[in-house]
Image 1 (cartoon, rainbow, N blue to C red):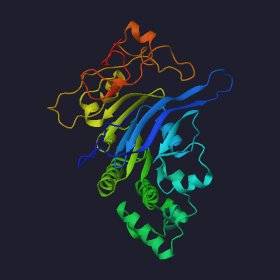
Image 2: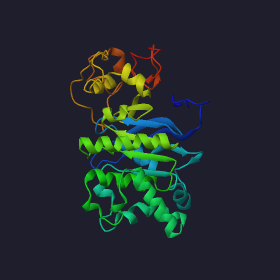
Image 3: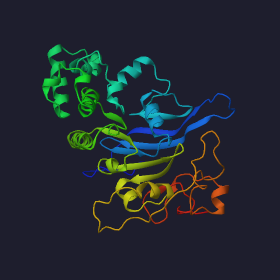
Image 4: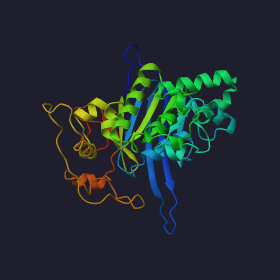
Length: 333
């Protein structure tokens, strides 16, 4: 699926990441059927682009991020970074790519070793570069300052910092080696409002200052709106709507996207809101997915065709995005 993102200053730039029909099944004890966490996800990310990957808990968004990082193996499909297929890559190749691809986890308290001071923690990605100590320390200091942290924290330990400062340390560690691609896994969900806004401001500045490509995994649509160029909405392991963030917020076409956006505050009260839509009923089990559309049992707009056919992403009717809803597609059956 080609990305709708374009370089505003020139011709279209190349994809740095390609995710092709990625699936992940987990074996469940006592069940003959697997749990389908991710069921055939495809998208691309360009240099300098931020893709928002959104959905409720259990949508598969975090699992996609972990497969991109190599923290989970895919059941099938492929992840291609800068022309290199990541699956089956030898350890040496993975280590070389570690300089280019970094991740920031949801809870900094879990990702920062409490035994190490901030200098050592942030310097960890630089071990592969064999830098002299002075050059290493300069890079660490620059990363901390870019993330809004004073150099006084260098010899402090994670437990001495607030949750917001800890997450800034995690971000500094991710960018210290000048990566080309960053996965942000719910980076603001454990923060209070003030710390959340500070981190988002830093991320937006990093976008301006570098050509860093980013996947921002989140259930927080307000945060996504202010930082993502493109948006992929996930439900039960599949992308159900994909396009420019502005287009999806202005005119969401999938019922699930409409339901998600119904609770998002509108910055301008004079601006018309998309049609409200409420879902009912329980989310189907990923071990026993229904025939047809996975949302049909909860969707007030479902028709007979929704029980017969399973929708895949196709161009939306009278809209620039792609949508996995049979009733909203340009080639409606």
